[in-house]
Every structure is written in C-alpha cells, then in structure tokens.
Length: 199
Figure: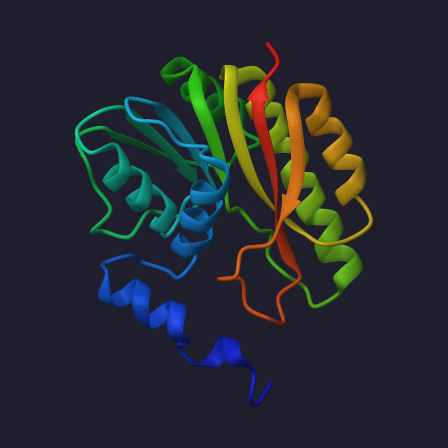
C-alpha cells in the first residue's frame, strides 16, 4: 500500500540501526523492562521467536558476561548476533526436540517472546494465530520459568486477549497488557506481561 509507514524507516528503525540492533523491536523490550523490571543480572533468559535478534542483543548487553540467553526461531539470527553466553536453537517452537533442548538449558528467570505469525491481512485469522502463539509461549513459561520469574509476550489485539490474561494470572501473581510507545501507531500488536511466577 502506498504511503504505509512500514515501507520506510521511522525514528525507531534509524535509532536501532545506529545503535547496532537488527530491528526496531528492541525499544519495545527496553520500555517493557524499564516499566516492569522483568530482567535481572545473572539471569537465564529464554527468547522465543528471536530472529533477527534485537531482543537477544538487548538481553546480552544487559547481562554482560553474566547469565545465559537461549534464543529460538525457525529463522537464523542476524550474523552479528553472538555471545559466549548465547545458545541459539533453530527450529519450530512446537517441535518436541526444540522444547526438550530449551528445557535442558533452563530453568529460566524470564521468558520473552516477540514472535508473530505470518500475517494474511485477515485480522480474524491473524489474531487467532497470534493467540495460539501466546498459548504456546505460556506453556513454555509454565514449564520452564522458575518460581518468581517473569514473562513478556506479544499478542495481536483481538478477542482472546482477556482470556489469555486470565490464563496468565493462574501462572503469575500479576498479569497485564501494555503497549509500548515504540509500537507503530497503526499496529494492532500489544504485549502481555506476567510478573512473579507462582510456582
């Protein structure tokens, strides 16, 4: 579509490039962490749907030489995304072998997930697929995040958001929706934040 802001770099895209991040999405995680403090030093972090790797780079910079990051995606990370405390698993989040590999590297202090389904342009289809991804991320959180750990997951705004928040409140002491300023104005994505895992 002519004139769509996705076609040209905006402020956040230019800032990401200048600061050495593969994509503008890094500033969404930064804003989430500044508000909710989901990351801790010396932590183990699980990054689902990580490619091209901006959230992974942010966490690696945050941790420095401490802690450990496990990132998973069907697609490879950008070639500049690397670290001695990074393990990248290339594969499908639904694949049992991928889940088992991730579980063996845990448990984790936080799970972050900026995964999005391939979009069709049909909002009903896209929001349903996004909700399915959130449910999968919550399964990872429930089985791999430590007691007291945190979670941040992207969702396309739609009918299942409140249902998924209720599910999160069964896993975490608190859960809420949050839309960072770095989201494009026309985007219908937002984030679900789970804090202080119950057990």
